[in-house]
Length: 164
Image 1 (cartoon, one colour):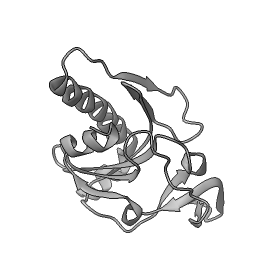
Image 2 (image 1 turned 180 degrees about the horizontal axis):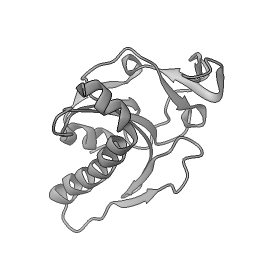
Image 3 (image 1 turned 90 degrees about the vertical axis):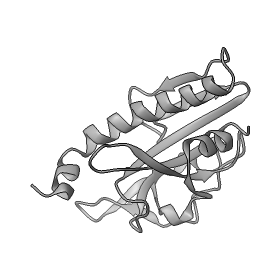
């Protein structure tokens, strides 16, 4: 089976592994920088408004939607819940990873430093359902090109996320 087919058939598994890895990596990086200062981690049981994980560190609240891709760049749009637009501390993080090891290689982020408000998503075109091609209500098509930060290391991403 071709590598692309393996990734497609296991996309939910891969996204879950990368989400858990991401949370652990962020917590470890912050602990390394300031031992004893905890990162509070909240994960949604049900993704209803586009937030996969919420981080609270010192006085910074981050509402994070995660996207995973096995390339360093992809022109395809991602369906992003429009409720993230304009929200303080909201961001979209694209995790680029190696297809054979699932090792994260870089990160792209759309959002501001710390508690800054993410841009409104109203100007983005409505996202379409990939199967029916109909407009997906409440979602906007956002491309990795729209990210405010590109090709970040984990350390650089943590600095942007928590305004360090």
